[in-house]
Image 1 (cartoon, rainbow, N blue to C red):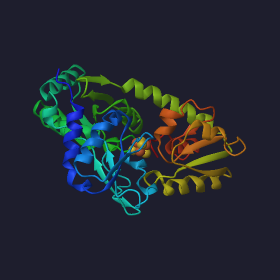
Image 2: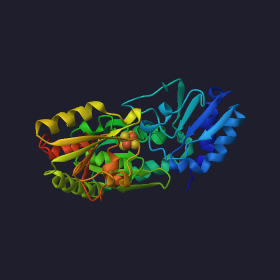
Image 3: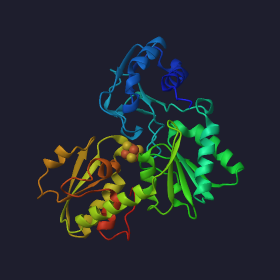
Image 4: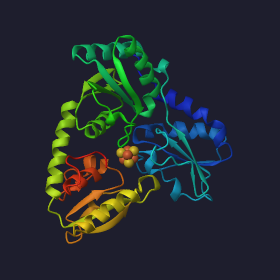
Length: 335
Ligand code: SF4
């Protein structure tokens, strides 16, 4: 089995932006999985002529929560944001004089045994009687996914749409009708988001490019959806709400905050705005029940699902809160 050589792939991608860091003070943001390449990246950037290289200690979950706007021009010239493209809802180019360069680390078709991958996909789709598909991919797998589109087309499958996806962005894949199945080039995280956004109405497979496997996550999405309905029901009688607002630029969705705030007011419910760049359960614990019986997160909708699903007070996504308030007739993801 052809193993992915991530170190070589990262080296190739960093060398592509070599010129843009020359003589600059660079702040690097890495997803957790890439932190083992910290030393390699530091050496590469210094060999490109960077004047100084520093790394973000906290986890980086997406370009939506880049620290660029918190950094000062006097300390850093450029943020190198590795592992993601610009956030489609708020594509940041610079902030307070600090430039941001995205290094999404995209695999080339040659990095992967695409013949083997295509065979696996075609066998799975054929066995399950799938005919019409749509394809989502996280940024690393863009070229692989686009290559597979051509191949599966040639084998008679109909591809309705292909789009990049994030944990809260689905590029219109969630608006399609008559899709037998979604193929997601990424992880369970991406598949689950799409499953929630489509209300698990079609089958969802994850294509694991590292492990050369295709796995069905439909029942997983259905199970999480049931949990989310339970959470929304728990919040139905809450009279006091905490609205969590993203303190980082890409997660500060004031239009959503205003929508929820005016709804709470019109229903005679109390709300308190709680700004946060990282919402941890100990921070929620410090907020008394006479301030918030339930919370709605307008920053990252996945906090409610991955991090706070078992919190002792209901923590909802905006689409779940709007369902709990009777605005939607079913939960929507993300808002
Ligand atoms: S799911 Fe959260 S971390 Fe991921 S892109 Fe959306 S807001 Fe950012």
